[in-house]
Length: 316
Image 1: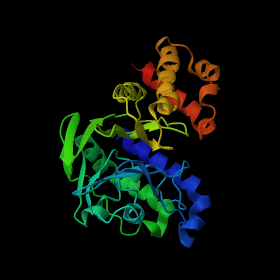
Image 2: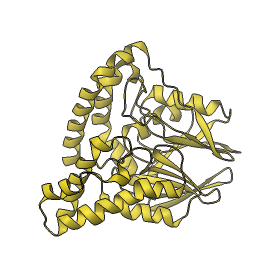
Image 3: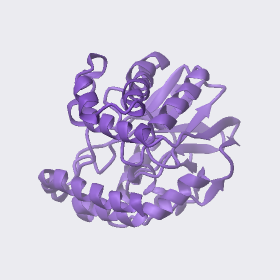
Image 4: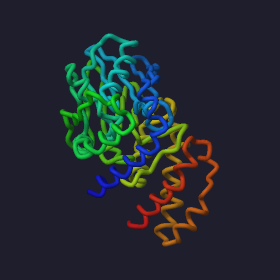
């Protein structure tokens, strides 16, 4: 119930920030995603760094796909039927192979509300159990939030939580000779997961990793989980990472712009909270951290991130 209430408040905030872009929805969004090769038959679809908007049809995240001899594995399906069609168009510029699987790394709207479009074409939609459960729980609020600024461009979108759910904290799947390993991160959003291709050494991190822009700590995010999950990711030594947001990167950039930031929140802000220092004094002391100042959205998110991190560690 707590997260549902906060979802409604967040939706209202999204609506206010999207009013200026509402006219773009009537004219038709201009953004068309495209695929870039990561390695061999593995591709990334890198979205814009800004917030969801009518102009980008809510596709402000990263997606990806793997072309196998038995069909395409798509990583996340977009925030709407139209968004799913745009992702499909990006795939079609690379291969005519059908999308056989859609794997959802998370439960935020732009990760899964295109599921129904691909399922209607015969794709199997796969996610970890907690991911699918959170999708079902938050579907109504997410649709209401998107409708406020996508309007008619949301037409035909039907929430479909993942239909094939995977038990446990880890799962292994294989299609067309491509092995995938899924594991929870439970970091940015409850039920978040990442997808690891061990042979290719490519990681689709979901919203665990942000580069080029500062990660967001939401009221239901977990800094502790983020720090732990990033260390587990780093231990796998991926050659390439498709982050939740930002350019395809190597581990070094992910460490600097996500791993180090989680360490900062846990070890600086978290320690101050556990030692019962005044919150305002802590936030003022770390108001400017040069190592992260270059990241997009830093000025908008950094203090709120620290506030939520302080509250999390204060209650432990």
